[in-house]
Each structure stands twice: as structure tokens, then as C-alpha cells.
Length: 186
Image (cartoon, rainbow, N blue to C red; front, side, top):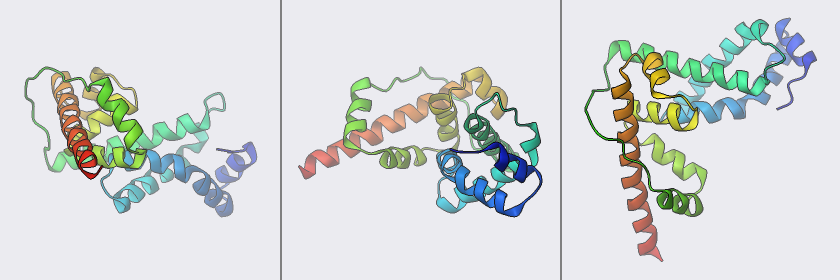
């Protein structure tokens, strides 16, 4: 991503062409984050547009010592979390259940990586229940720990652990089913 100081300056000056250019440059990075948190393309693009608006309004807070892409990803992720919180206020879509964490077998992951491309794996993650998908993304992809997830999503650490376990269990089942279907075709 080639975000130049001149482009940043022009965006801060609210020059429309510069903002369009920044949108074009940021789109792939932001969409990769948004598509992990939204199930369909339209919702992911709506989330991306909300995040980009925040990028433009908070551009004056960007510090050049931080890689722009990392700053951009953080704002996009925080926008997804904010949107989740807003949805959660109107509907609770998680519940707390005890359970030991299931670890995905490394062999299953390695087979999946070699047999299926990233889009297929993303498709499987998007089939997870919404809250389990959110926790899985935050823990596995974005590197948050359970305490941080619990704070950001207003849940207990136990609930966060349960959702991660649930996501892993569901993914494992989906991967096995997918691999069995592939084996039947061969």
C-alpha cells in the first residue's frame, strides 16, 4: 500500500480526488477485514464504508511512526466491533456454556490449506454462528486474547472461550465433511 505523505496531506485538506485515491488504495486491505466479520458482500462493503469514513475523520490522529496499514486495519476492526455492539443491544446472540476448548488438529488444518484456497476457508468461517465467528476472528486472526475479547464484546472470558471452542468444533466438522466430499469425487 503506497500512501504518500502528499496523499495524506491532500486528504486532510478534504480534496475529493485524494480521498478517492485513498479509498482505492485502502479498499483491498479494509475489505479483507470486513469480509471476515460480515456474511455477505453488501454488508461487508457497508462496514468498509463506515470504517473509511472513520479513517477520513481520524486521519489527523495518524502518527507516521505507525505503519499506515496497521492503523487502517485497527480502525476497520474497531468499526466492526462497534457495529457488533450496536447490533447486540437489540438482540443477544450468544449464550454461556461451559466446555473444554477443542484444538483443531494440525493435520486437519494442513490438509485444508493444501486442498482449499483462502476463499473456501473464509466461506467456512462465515458459516459459523455470528458470535462464534466474531470471537474466532478476533482470537485467531487478529491476535486478541480472551480477556481483551471479553472486554471489547461485553462478555465473560468463559463465554469468549466457549465461542472459540464452538467455532473450532464447527470448523473441524465442516472441514471433515468437505474433505470427505472431495474424497468421494476422486
